[in-house]
Length: 254
Image 1 (tube, rainbow, N blue to C red):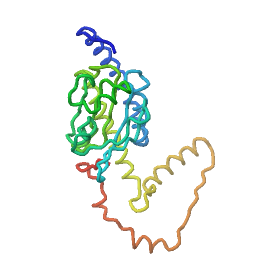
Image 2: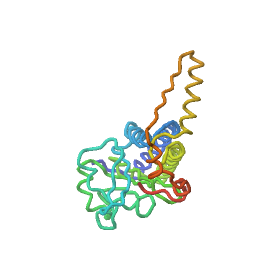
Image 3: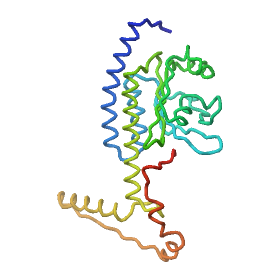
Image 4: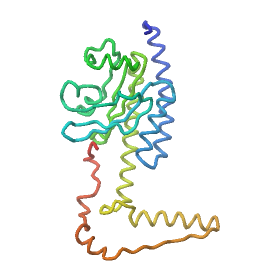
């Protein structure tokens, strides 16, 4: 384990802040081009690790089951056995960074696993995997946490003020990226069946028709009919649009 004085910590801080700025540009490109929210989760976790600046990156979604489980939906740099039995209950094991981020809706940082008294029950395990500092960033819309981005470093004091601000900006951008994708899916998906609706069909059809004209290739349209679908629709359809409309002021954790 290296020893750090003030000047070495300052130098490390500047290097990491510059690297984080470069990193956020790459992440913005991912968010802008993503078609599915899973693309944002997986690709950003991988980019965070590929830059060699961080040792582990994972994204957790909170469940509202009895144990208030946190489910990892994406990870990179993951070592088997570390992301197990994570929850956000208000008990001593739910007071890790991730659990606190879900409950308080604020960023939580562990600057040094060797010195942080609040990190005592996780210290041995963290050091075993080489995680000396970590951060949990709640990604939220209108104060509702969609998921938490967790990042770990093998260096202590990795997340200073400058780097924290950069990563919190990334967390906000990720939240809005996922939120926008969900809005598009809500707009283009039939509420009853969960499949693309007529609006989405019209958009795709026009796009493919233009492609066909441009490339001078045939365009084939297949139509299917379901017998007695009216009976099914009368029983399970006709969902109240007001009740299903996405309300940006109420977005569930999962």
